Amino acid sequence: MKAEYVNAFVESTINAMQTMTMISPQRKDVKIKKEGESATFDISGLIGIAGEAVGSVILSFPEDTAVKVVSNFIGEEIPEVNRDVLDAIGELTNIVAGGAKKIFSEQGYHFKISIPNVVHGKDHKINRPKDVPTIVVTFSSDAGPFAVEVSLKMGPKPA
Amino acid sequence: MKAEYVNAFVESTINAMQTMTMISPQRKDVKIKKEGESATFDISGLIGIAGEAVGSVILSFPEDTAVKVVSNFIGEEIPEVNRDVLDAIGELTNIVAGGAKKIFSEQGYHFKISIPNVVHGKDHKINRPKDVPTIVVTFSSDAGPFAVEVSLKMGPKPA
Image (cartoon, rainbow over all chains, first blue to last red; front, side):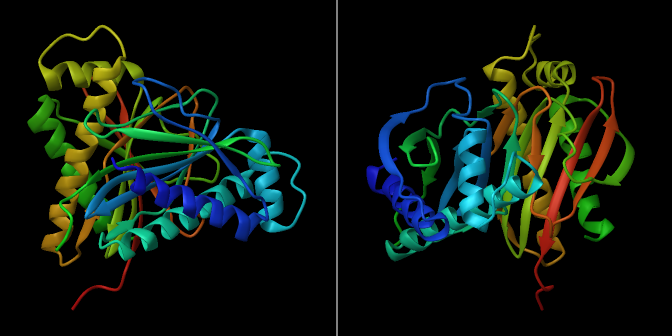
């Protein structure tokens, strides 16, 4: 997977966070995920990608970060993780995937995105096919750390 | 969501199990998933759907069932859940989603499917958007119980 493909998701994540939550995240670390590693954090918004690129994107938050991010997102103090928080994390994942989709389409790659699924559970693992590498980008922010995981298999570049 | 849409996934699941694992599952129960309910079991293969229908399909197995199903699938006794089991559950989910996609396409609906993500974790919850209902179909089989969860938002029927 080329760096530019991951960058589309990084750019879209920073845009979405700034626009929707008024939080400005800093990109910290980029690495290839090892086999069998847990999801980065406890709440993972997941969207499937299908078309000229096939894969998935995950936004993964510790519970504390998720509560702060969603409080900013909906403009109301939320005390703890509840259904609204999970819904809002799904919506945020949708905005990030939609933004990346737009960037890819400007580069000539077209794909569609599925509805968001939000996984909630301590130490949950999300396993992906062996032939599709997963790149994990970690961020720091005023609301706490979070991560974006991108698994993508590109088709041939369309003419 | 119409019954016929769920039936496409039920039919595809029974086909895939019989063909790939020589297990003949019986459909037990069909219900609409309530808010905040856990995933049906501990290992959930998940595939995103995007196109004229948007949503996701999940195959959810208790660990015991997963080990038996995958032992049959790869023709080798597997002692416990490992990376191969998670990969095989992903592959099986892919076959079920691919089969349903074919049935839908015969009905005039075209969509694409993403790569499988396999969630592994005790009591993990998978939350979906409020406006997309989730239908849970439970099955019994010689390998034990398992479930198929379908969330689908259909576009207008193409002409």
